[in-house]
Amino acid sequence: MAITLGTFTKQDSGDFSGILKTLNVTANLIIHPVSRQSENAPDYRVYAGNGQRYEVGAGWSQVAKTSGETDLNLKIAAPEFGPNWVRARLVKLETPQEDGTTHLALWEPRER
Image (cartoon, rainbow, N blue to C red; front, side, top):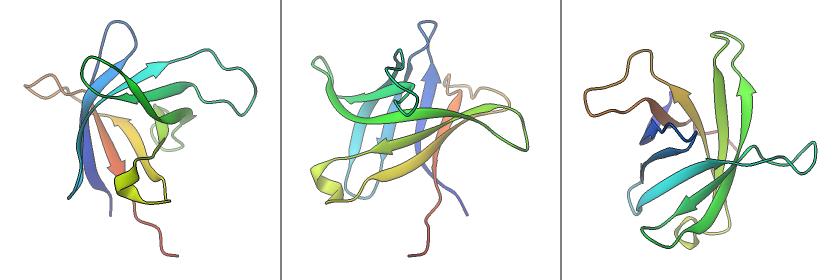
């Protein structure tokens, strides 16, 4: 079962802008494409904040096996999350929502 953590809109610049919400955190995020510096480097950097940007994570492109769409695997960190990263998948909606939302950030809890 996937849980929606955020809603995002893809901008003409290639950025995704939106809001990540958990029980304790509500954050405006920008997911910005970057040039890869190495094979394992991220395709995107994740920034939080209004006005000044603070880097809080990264994202890697991955082609979904079932749909063929390109999803982003995100890793996001914040002191509120403790020493663990929040991992989410940014997936494209079949049809944009009335508010302009084009993508959802989904979290799928893993058993330890």
